[in-house]
Length: 71
Image (cartoon, rainbow, N blue to C red):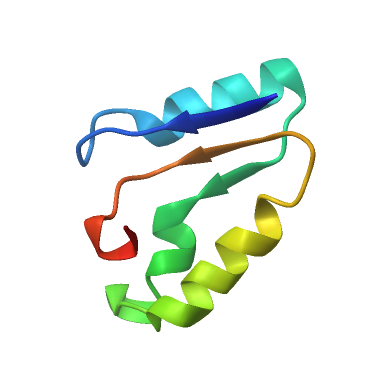
């Protein structure tokens, strides 16, 4: 099962993702947590893309976030 949760900032994506991940026993990736480094400084796009590509190699997952800069 692969689930992508998208939405505006503070719309409840992370909370919803955590509940789904717990219910379906899925690994979860919160894009906010890998997109930003300390003090909310954006990390290098290639590093973030690499981490996402590694994560989605799994058979099942759930990801939340919306970042046009990654598109």
